[in-house]
Each structure stands twice: as C-alpha cells, then as structure tokens.
Length: 269
Length: 360
Image (cartoon, rainbow over all chains, first blue to last red; front, side, top):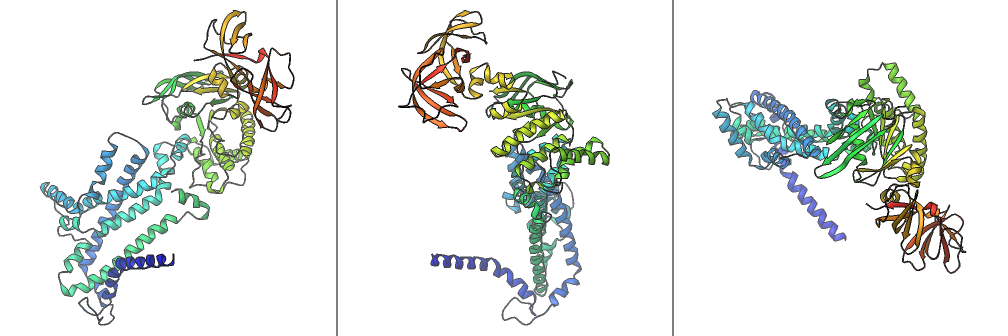
C-alpha cells in the first residue's frame, strides 16, 4: 500500500515538473542581466521590464490584441450561447450537422483555416489587418465557448423557464430575468476563455494581420534579434502572470454572489 | 356558477405516432376542485400542459370563461401553474419569487405590497421573505410555488402532482390544507395526480384517464361505487374480478352465470346486453364478510386462508375458495389472523355489492 502511494507521488512530481519547469525559466531569465538564456545567471536586473515601457510597438501590439480579444470573445460567446441553448433545449432537423459545422474550426488544422480565410479575404479585395484576424478568432473561439456553455446549460432545469412564461413573461423577458442570470457563471467563463485563446493565438494572426501585429506576432518578430530577446522574456513572464490571474478570476467569479445561502445554486449550475 | 367554465372540445395531442391525448371532450365547473387521475403515460400531464399553454393541441379547442385560449401563449392565459418540482427561481428570494409575476399586471407599489402580504399570510409563509429556495424545506417550497401562482389571481390554478415529492405525513396535511384553501379562495383548481387516494379525498369531481382517453368522469364516491369499466374498477381501490356471462334481463336486473359459483340475479346499471360472455363481476374486498360459521347471505363459500396482512384498522385476508382455483381478497375490521382455526373460514357476498362490468 505504502509503496504504491510513493510511486504515485513520484509520478505526480515528475508530471508537474515536466509541466511547469520550462515555464519557470522564463521569469528567471527575465531578471537575468544578460542577453543570452544560459547558466550561470549573470546577476539580477529589472532593466528588461523597464525596457518594455519605452517600446511603442509593443504598446500598439498589446492594444491590438486587447481589441481583437474583446470583440472575438464577446461575439463568439454570444453565438455560442444561442447555439448551446438550441442544442440542449430542442431537438431539430439537422442538429448533428450544425453541431459538427460549429465544432469544425476546433478540429481542422488552424493553418488550413488561416489560409482559407486569407484566400477569400484577398480575393474579396479587402486589406489584411485586425478585422480578418478578429473574424478568424471568432470562428476559432466559438467551439470552445459552446462546449463550456453546453456543459452549463445541460444541468439547467427548464421548468424554470416555463414557470416564467406561466407567470406572464414573454420569451425575451424570460431570457433576461431567468435564463441569463442563471447562465451567467458559464457565460463569464466562456468570455474569459475565449479572450485568452484569442490573446494567445498566433497562426491566424500570422497570416491575416498584415502590418497590424498582435502581441504574439510582436514577440515572434522580436525574437529574430538577439538583443531584443530579454524584453520578450519579460513580456512572456508578464503574460503568464496575467493569464494565471484571468483563470483565477474566472474561478472566483463563478462563486461570487453565491454566498452560503445560495450554495445549492452553485451546485445546480 | 358557470357549468362550462373550462371547455375542452375534441382535444387531441399527438407526439409523432403517440396519441398522448386522444379526442377528449369535457367541461370543468367554475370554482370546482377537479382532478385528472391516471397511471403515468395516460395523458393527464399533457392535458394540463395544453391548458397551461406549454403544448398546443393537434386538434380541438380550449375555452376558459367563454374565451378561446387554444392559440394563446402561456403568458397570455388566465391560468397559473404549480410545478411538480415547484420550479422556484433559485437566484432570487421568496419575496422576489412571489413578485415575479406581478410586474406586467400594472399594479401600484401599494397594491403589490398588499397582494404579497395577503398571499404570504394565506400560505403561512410570513417571515420567510428573505429566504432562498435552498433554505426551504419541501413543504415550504410547495407553499412558495402556490403563493407565486395565486398572487396573480388566476381564473384557473393548474397543479401538476404538487404533493408527489413530500413524505406521507406532510402530504396528508397538505391535502387537507389545499382543499381548505381552494374552498376559501374559490378559484377553479385542476389537479393532476397518479395517486387515487389523493384524487378521491380532495376533489369535487375526478376524470380517470388511460391511454389518452377519459375512462370515467364523476364524483369520487361514484367512481368507487359505480365504476363504468374494468379499468376504473381496478384503478380505484382494490377489487376482485370474477368471470361471468349474462343471460336474460329482468327489469333493471340481469341474470348472470358466475364461473364456478352458479347463476345469480344482479343489478345492471350499465345496461349490459343479454347473452354476452365478455363480462366480469367486481366485488370490493371490504363489501364481503369473512366468518367462522356459515352465513345466510346470497352467496356463502367455504374457503382456506392462504395469507393475511395486518393493516392496523383492518386485516386483509387472501383466501382460496374450495373447489375454485382462485385467490380472493377480503378485508375485515373484526377478525385478524388469530381468529381462525385451521385457516378455514366462510366468505359471504351480497348480490347488492356485485358490479357487473363489460370487458373492452
């Protein structure tokens, strides 16, 4: 019995080590006073972080990523919410086909999605930039958001919606007063996850952004110059912290406003 | 009092090939406590949902208080429903739940407050305004669901097995309370249940349903004493069926040959034709007498007790009649399993208590 537990512990440690040690190198080297990623460490510095303040292109790329991320996450969560509701609540003709169609961008290689959008966009005569990137991100984020929302809505007691109709609310009133507040944790989770996916996305941005770089594009561009590497490491470290913060926020938001007296809803939802 | 307050005219509801409700027509009186009773899948819940507007009929039309509601959505109907699982909104408290349906009625704040206070008093939930559904017991949730529906002052209250989730003691209490409440406020109740005892004890009239059709619609005592067919006789209470065939009529009565027992003259309320072999005689366990000695009743049979079950207020005997390979159920308030030596007894039946029924 004891032996078995130990081997599981070793496995667990190796697993987490494999997962997180490479990621930990980034912040370590971002404080290292050298241009190369190598041991021994040369000394502690915050110069690389200070350098980020002065990079106008970095600020531009960050702002571009935030804009794309916000629009992509809001639009894809809205589409996903309607689709998830339809898939869970109703049985209709072509249900499996439309489900498959929405999930498709999740399954086909991203590069193929990127090239297809590129070809169509150019043939339509539109300029490359953040608009086609946003469209690509909406396609790409919707399946993720839908999976989260389907999981939420599946446990939902639809007699609550019937009760609302029975008590004099029409379909919109019911959605606004009953469904939306009860789906809210799922909606927030879908928004945050879509935003993070869009924020980190590289391949679609690479093909479609033209000269309007998003943050991952900016980092990729900078990596070609040895001298620029350290501040990219610093940026990477900041993004890791930011992403972790968003994920924790998503968890916290799931529980907020559902104090002790409302515990049973949290379970239901 | 409007005799045709709710009119159900030729209503059918088909789901694919399944006829959940099959060409049903009847009326419900104003202020009546009306029950739809039947086993699961008999169409009673579908009929209730058709009245509420959650389903639309395949054929037929529905009228409440003279106006056609067949095509109206649920929010435009003068009905409110108490759901089986109560469907209390979990994200708002009891008071907000009760106020939920008042928003569109165009009431002033004072009127809203008065209505909420009145209904809280009616269902005895004063002091629970701030609670959420997770902090309420099953019985309290039931009261919130009731209050939330009644506060809108509907013409008809629809109740979908509202007592099913409660334990027996609480259920008995709520039955009495619902009945009292209904008489007090005078709103028409349409109550769906699969529990025959519940339907019989609470209702003014009961419609027994099976396979999408109404099998019998009458007052509870009529259902029990004069069932119109085998299904109703079997579903309401317990009974013994004896195979029989009819012979000649004699006024209101008819001569029947009961298998293995002989020829008798019994009442023929259902006007069953002569010379039919598709009939059975139904005898309730408590209308028979069990005794140690032979009696002078119309039918008296020697029998052997196979099994007894003691029910407190009465004992149920499962006896095998000598010469007939059939187990008959008899109940008695006077005797129990200690009363008989060698398990031998006599079973007596009065012809008055035999109901003659036709097979399908």
